[in-house]
Each structure stands twice: as C-alpha cells, then as structure tokens.
Length: 301
Image (cartoon, rainbow, N blue to C red):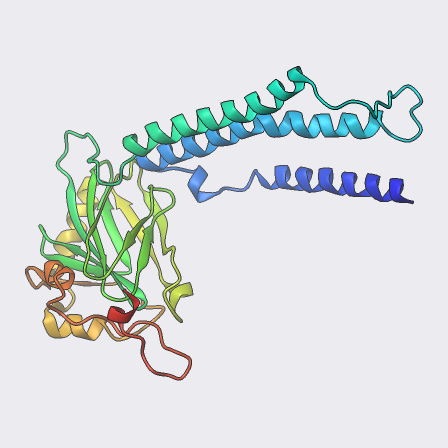
C-alpha cells in the first residue's frame, strides 16, 4: 500500500509539471516585451530559469532513478548500511549549488546596473517628460512640457524614451506596465525616476502593484503607444477639450473614487507635481480603517 501511494504521488507530480508546460503557451505580459527594458527583464527571467533548471532537472531525474532502482523488488540494488562519507559526492553536492549561486549573482549584478530605472535610455530622440501621481484609486499623468494631463490613460509616442517622475498623493503605491518594463514605488513626499520606451504601437495594460485600499483592484490604466503624427494630433485635440487642472480641481481628485473612466485636462497648473512632492498640497485620505475613520498618510509613512 505505501508503495502504491508513493507511485501515485510521483505520477501526480509529473502530471502537474505537464499541465504547467501546457499552460506555458499562454501569452504572459512579462514575456511579451514591447520595449528595451521589458526585453531586458525577460532575458533575466529566462536566463535565471535556465540556470536553475540545470540543477532542478538532473535532481528530479536522479530522484526518479533512485526510486526505481532502490525499489523493494529490485534484488540487484546494493544495500550499504556502513556507508558514511564520499569526497567525490561531497564535491558534487556543494560545487553545483555554488556554481548556480555564482552565475545568478553575477547575472543579477550586471543586470541591476544595465537596467537601473534611473538610467536614461540611449536614443537620438529627446525624451518625453512625464509626471505620474498615484491617487485613491486612479492615476494622474502630467505632461509638463505640453501643459496637459490625463487620468487613467497614458498616451505616448512610439520609439521615444519616456522619462517618468513618480510620486503618490496618498499611501505607498507601485507603478507597473509589464510589457514596457520595471515596476517602481511611488511614495508621498518623494519622487522616483523611471525610464521606459515603447518600440511598437499598441495598447498596454498598466496597474498598481501594491495594495492601497478598497479600490486597489480597479486601479488600472492603459498605455496607448501611437505613431508620432497620431500622438501630435492627440496633443492638439487635448489642448482644446477638457477642463483645467488647477489647485481646486486637484483637490477634487483627492476624493476617493474607483473605476474612473479616462479623461484629459487641456491645461495644468505649473509646478503641480513639485507642489505635491514638497507637500505644499494636502495628501489624499488613504485607506479607511474598519471603524470608518481615515488613516492619515503621515501615520502610514
């Protein structure tokens, strides 16, 4: 009976591996990069997987061989109760994990410098400056050079480096567009830098990657990458339509709302992002405590 249970568990394990391999055909955003930073992240994931499989696969194969060879019914298997030490075995057991750690550590060291979020992306085109503010529970994107802003939709030109400055008007949050690159934290009173680029036109899903309260599940946005002429047309249209983003309008954005449909502002109060990071404007309410009282941002941070 125990032998049957052992074989059933082994078959169940291999079945799970087969199912996982079958699902690998699904399109995962982090494995479908649309920019150089996301491509670098994909290479790191695949290289790490290959290095770790170099020890996992032989270990699983050895486990299967040992289970079959040392089964109860195999009379050819040698039983050595006096065995206590083997120098060759010790070398094998310690050298392979050491090599894995060495390769993974070296790859992480090189990639951490190459994909530094604050490092500009080399390009002949000047970067597009963007200011990002995480609110409860929506995203505000400011184009300081163009003097316009957008809520829950980030429109960018294809092939142009994006220089983002990211902060939060409420609790800690995380900005993440899986198909474009690395995620980064946004914190109240601080400004984080992130450099990305979209190399092909399309709509890419962006999200908040850190729990931030009741409306967190709906705190998503679209990144719309357009050719240069279509991006210029969008900017021209935005300058004509929509309200103005002044201080009273920004204070209205601080109210907690979820599932906000994307819309734009035709002009923006100069220095709004700097006023938020310098805490010259009030913070958002933040998540609600169970008794209904608001939890202040200052207390959280």
